[in-house]
Amino acid sequence: MLPPLLIESLQGIKGFDKTAFEAVHQSALQLTSIRINPAKKVERATDNPVPWCNGGYYLSERPSFTLDPLFHAGGYYVQEASSMFLWEVLKQTIGQNTSGLKVLDLCAAPGGKSTLLASYFTNGLVVSNEVIKARASILVENITKWGSDNVVVTNNDPSHFSVLTNFFDVIVIDAPCSGSGLFRKDKDAIGEWSENNVKLCSQRQERIVVDILPCLKQGGTLIYSTCSYSKQEDEEVLDKIKESNYLESVALNIPDNWGIITTQSDKTASYGYRFYPYLTKGEGFFIAAFTKTDGGLDGYYQEQKLVAVSKSEAATMQSFIPLADTYTLFKQGDAIKTISTDWFSALQLLAKQLYIKKAGIELGTIKGKDVIPHHELAMSHLPLNGFNTLELEEQKALQYLRRQDIFEESNLGWNLVKHCGLPLGWAKVLPNRMNNYYPQAWRILKD
Ligand code: SAM
Image 1 (cartoon, helix red, strand yellow):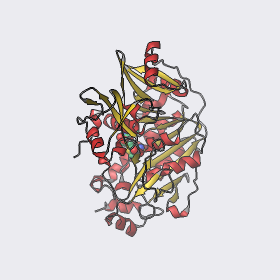
Image 2 (cartoon, helix red, strand yellow):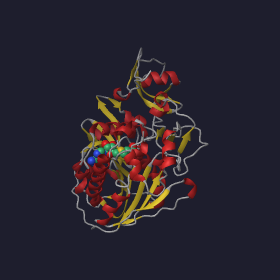
Image 3 (cartoon, helix red, strand yellow):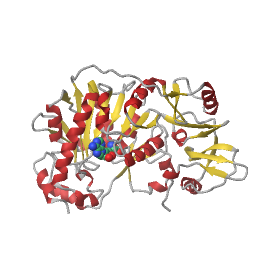
Image 4 (cartoon, protein in one colour):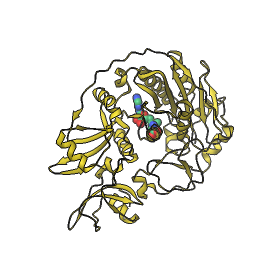
């Protein structure tokens, strides 16, 4: 049963209709949607697009994603359709020219918004942060599979960013919330809802925004979202953050037939956009955008040197994977990594302040004369056509993804294992066996 106190608190909010709300939660209808990775181009039925997001599609049924090799190859991300509206917000606030922009996704795990941002800001830098360590690891997994080389994953509290004054052009806060918007999908969450939690979430949301706002440049865009219907977590947070900061609310143009409800907060008339599952084809969601109008232009950063690779290491790597000279190689421990040279100094600066979980693409480690390639390289969009490949049919691909022993005739040495032409990971072929290098932690456990 839906919490009566929630229903009561929603009465009078624009777009809320008690009868329709209860009916939609009683119905057995479940929506499934995916967003295709534009850099990997998998073939999927595209007859039912999500109207507000490039590459977003509704599926007619929910397949077992775990048993689809192309899911593990980062060919697509399973994302709830309302959340994909971030794409439309970016289109209307940032536009097409994303070159050189620095973007922070502050509450990023498991990575739905970050993978969308990585695809949108192909010429920008995306810093994808998650405060909870275990969730940051899932984030690394999903970002790795997505394969973009313009993402840095960090594991920090929002307050740790405070030294990066006026650093980001765009900040996305997909805030931790009471989660009522997902009740249709996750019935167990209904029992966890309480008025007190809504209050605690609201206070935490305000604190997160206030902590991070100094990091947004003047003229920069702040995007705030939740999957809660509660006004305390939505419009009331907009009021609190607008009252004490230099922010201007951004109004969006939205076609009526998308069923999205435009609201304005009580005190500052800030625009918010509400998604109700009986009006839109998606789950409950709330999103709003602001432009930062003032707040100082200062910001002094002292750059920290990441470890440079030696000439011989660079030569070894270059012969293993030839990269354009627009990439910089650097080392973290033994791992040799690369990022676009355009973003190297920003990365140096981030590395000084934050705990970096992933930066650019890890190419591999040098062991004697050999290079042990890293999974991030297999998942990346870097030129991989120089490697031997081993194409596996579905059942063999699943065996590979379970990290089982398989043997297939192929060229000796490192092979890029593929399914339907999309890389799944690495295998080393020896004369009488094959070593499976699929990451242990990410192997499929389900039969
Ligand atoms: N943006 C993600 C996506 O699209 O896949 C979903 C983010 S989820 C709604 C909110 C995230 O905020 C969670 O991963 C949670 O661990 C994190 N979080 C929890 N407490 C936080 C805090 N105090 N500051 C920042 N993030 C927090």
